[in-house]
Structures are given as C-alpha cells and as structure tokens.
Length: 402
Image 1 (cartoon, rainbow, N blue to C red):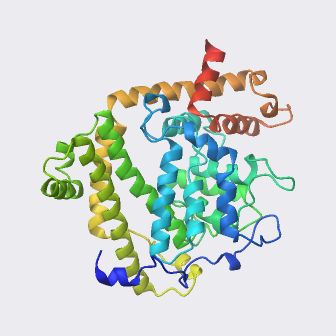
Image 2: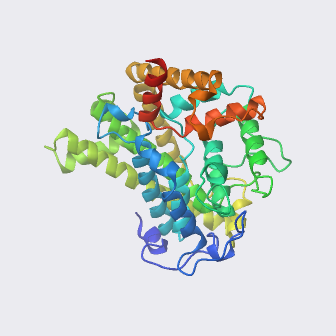
Image 3: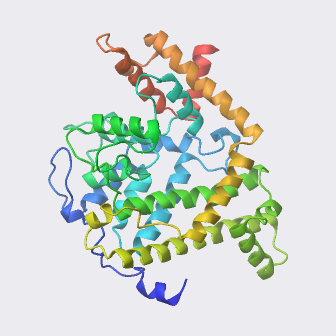
C-alpha cells in the first residue's frame, strides 16, 4: 500500500468520517425502543443478527460444496464470518462505522435456503406466478417478520440503515422516477421490498451507505479468494491454470520467487491471503480517489451519487471478472458439482410440492389455517423451506419419500 494511502486510512484512529453513518443520528426502527446505555444502535443490530435463529442455521447451509462433502469446505456461516472480517477491515481503513458494516455482512445471507443457489432456483420455480423467490428479499423477510423472539414485534426490529443496506445489497432497485431496474428480476425485487416495508421509505432509488457498499464488495472479495481455495481442495482448479490468469498469476510468481520449494497446500493458502490483501488495498485506494472527487459531507451525500463510492479500480475490476469467469467455468459449472446441485434442486422442489399437497406434513406452527389465499399459503411453505439447513432438508426428504 502506498505511503500516501497509509497516511490517510483509519487504522488505529477512532474518528469517524463525515460521510460515515452515524448511529446517534439513525433514522430509527419500525418499533420505537429505548436507547441502550452500553451499545450504539448499529451494535445492537449486529448483536441481534448474531443471536438470531437464522444466523445459527447458516452453519449447515451450502456455500459452494454441499455441507457433507468435507469438513474443510466453506459453509454459508464460515463465508459470512469471512465477509464480516473483510467488511470491518475496509470500514476501519475508510473511517466508516465498523459496526454497521459488520451487521450488514453478517446478515447478507440470512435468506439463503438449503443447498445455496440450487435451493434458491428450485424455490423460485415453485413460486412462479406467486411472487417468486429471491434470497435478498428473503433476508428482509427474516429480519422483519420471520424471526419471532421479542414480545413487542416480529423480526429483529433493525434500524433503517441496516434494512436499507440489506435491501440494496447490489445497488438501487429503481430509478428516480420509480421505474424498476435490472429487468423483470429487479421489478419483482422492488415490488416485494415495497410490499414488505410500506411503513418506511428505504430510498430504493439511491445507492446505500458506504458501509453497505463495503459489505457488498467484501462479499465479492471473499467469494473470489475462498472459492479458489475450496476449488483447489476439490481438485476442480489447479495452480498451473490459475497462473495463466492476470492477478493470480502475478501473485503465484511472487510466491514462487520468495519460497521456491513451498508445498502446494501452503502455496494455495499464500495465494488466498495475498489475493485478499491485494483486493482490499485496491478498494481502499480507489475509494479514497472517488471520495476526493465527490467530497461528501454526509452519509446521504454518498447515497445520492450516481455510482458507488466503494469500488475496485478499473484494472482490479477487470482482474476480478477474469477470476469469476474462471470460477464459473471450472467450479460452479463443473459436471460433478452440477449433478449434485441438480439433485439438490429436486429435493427442494419435491419437498415444496409435498407440503403444498399435504399441509399436515408441515409442523403445526407452519400449517395453513385454511383462510389464506393461494399465494400466502405458498409463501408460508417457501418460508419454512428456506429456513431449513441442508441436513434437515435431507432428513425431511427421507421422511416423506423413503
């Protein structure tokens, strides 16, 4: 990292930048609560996420490889913890609110069903014409209504800033005229969010806070680095092929020069470590340049921009796209993994159909009363299925289908 950047970043400094989210100026919660004498509003959000049932279930939900394929592959929980570490590092360097960035990183995958994106695809097909299924929208459902722990409200009653960051995980959902972005998926997403949060304006047209942007890019960094690590462990990637890519190739050349006789497993770890460091330092440098050009005086100034302020440089963005393309070709679309994921989709799809055909197969709490319309009853089944771990979904499949 250049000395200029090192002089400006916030490691070891306690001051918060003017453009950072301020917990003392939060827009508040859906249900008013007394302030805590020992924790800020964003610290309370983080703690509520960590203590939620949905967060605990992440330990047995697929990241890329199904949970029972090996002890050392990432699960949705270990991925989430790694994202939170990177988000907090970025927030500290940029003098943002670390607690808000961490809360958003810890909550960003709460809506994932069993078997990861395979389960999401199956539920989206099952809910076609009934609102569809999207894990980002489901995360909002978890924190606003599905967690039932507190006496005065459903959900976790998180602050406006945390809800906003969850909803706009990938940027604005509509333009300033209210027209949905990102095609049909974006329209469904925006409509679902608006239906779930009619009491509060989450500024669906704006970028989220810098803290939310830090959590989102931390997700990309964690995906790239740790999916390479898992892909090498699974034998779907090789160090030789990775050396042909721009950024991994340069890092592997440095490792070989510094440690010519290093064992392959240590080379893999060193590549992962150096890749994370390179990406974090690039984001910090590019973000400082964008902040200098923008000169934001508040968190809302960041929200009102026409592009994200926390971002990769053009060169790193190109390198990151190359890494993702390699991961898609060699890991995510690998025949062995695809066969497992197709089987997982079948499990989730057949479970959904079984519960819809025979509501008595559901636990008592989740059974429809008979007064619900078709879409509401189907959503209730989707909520139940989305909360399952891989292990529980497999056990239910065996129970119902033998």
